[in-house]
Length: 483
Ligand code: GLN
Image: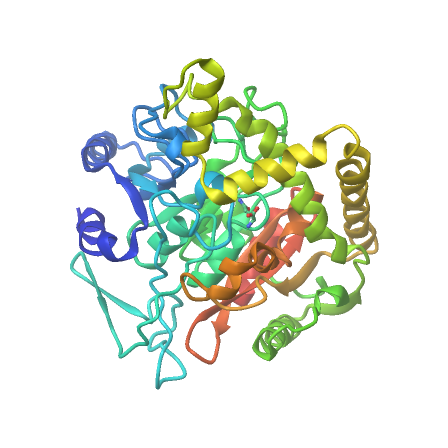
């Protein structure tokens, strides 16, 4: 009830939820109470969660924040959410996101932008009276959310595409949230909102029942208030699944048990190629701070090279749109959501897709069909796939040399303003937000974003840790030292 009241009080301002499900929440909470009365308790018994609108939830709107999925209510549940409910979690509703998860600011949603609960501070260098990130800008008072300080009026983006998930967790509108990451969509919004987000190894979590964007890159994970919560949520989300042939049959470790383990003697790699041109000084300073913390905790810091890093972003923006153009071919006005009538079936397809998809989605479909078309396939798509292999090898070489974990900034800046003119004028500027995160998806590796400090305006900044395939434990262990 406290979370439902908080959503009621704050959602008009933040727009983090696109669907709230109070009846479902109360029904699930009651069932949870009944289980507790019988002495049964799941790992997430009674914990209220927000679900990104990309996850199929039975009988509840699942629209990927696109007009083309208007009114779509799946008759099935995604494996991830089914796993969470089986552990006793409670659904509060569906969270806003970039349309089909394409974007880095949550501004491509059909349901409008999400507002970051954090604001720039005018006079004060820090908004953090307490020791806990995320609580600085807000006081949680009896179900409402009120602003704590005199703040700049500019509304900031929460990052994307899981902007609703990050904003809702940061503003106490859920205890944790599901999210997905194709090129940074868990880690970048986590960094922009002072929350923790982990993209697990490709194959760790089933993709079944999650609306597909780029199937070889998509992976679901949690956004949570701290590393412990993220560890508990990922344990519940992860499973092998017959319905997703790319899910991997490996036991899911007790991630929480990794917290508190010493990092003494651990080898932490610092990739020199991530020192990108034009990177703000405060991001460099944050990185140095992270290095110092891990050094103090007994880790060994080593300089490493990932030589193909500079090709990751261009290659990603070929591979991801190519797969998206193929995945999005199914939205034809016949099977799901919106149908705009035409004189014949072809005109109906055209009109439904013309009206149903937003600008960014259409841009991706056009890039994707172009790079896959005869005559261009070899020049673009095939080249990008080769580059992808080289990127993967860069990481393999580093991990083979004994490096346990790689430390980088999570994003090249703190949260920026809604309707930023530079980014609106040039989509490539928006794509640059993903510069530190896409390599991880290209290589299929796990990556975590952990809050590590504030910029000069009191906005949260995050560090990223990248690990070996299926070694999420080392990420939790190391992130716990940083947080
Ligand atoms: N920002 C990236 C994109 O727009 C990544 C999105 C994601 O991870 N879903 O493609």
